[in-house]
Image (cartoon, rainbow, N blue to C red; front, side, top):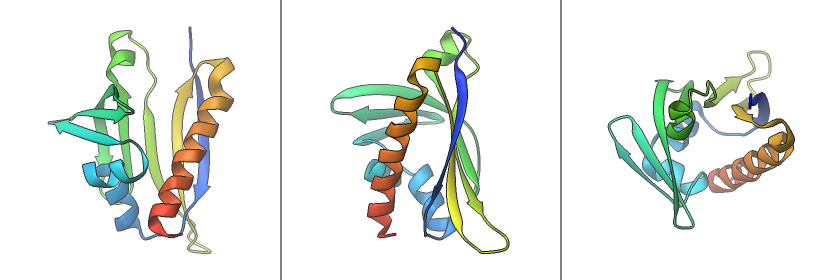
Length: 128
């Protein structure tokens, strides 16, 4: 089944460096995205309540974005990925994280809600 691409823009008040650190380091990710993460080269094993999901780091650019692909999707030849991108409005200086992800059509709303809950947890961690 073809997955549907969606994006969420989530305003967050923090510096690029701090946000990037929260998106790209094991300690940063464990504060808001998962309970724990183990990294071997580019393969990240994310752990939630004892269950594990494995993703490959596809590409990243310091202080800008990080992009992952779930290994399960890769094995199925699925083109989906998830990306966390830092956006700064040049006019206002306001910052946001833009999440790009994929879900099956009937699961898009649930997936968005899950991301929003995760990002609200990041905002709490950052005190923003």
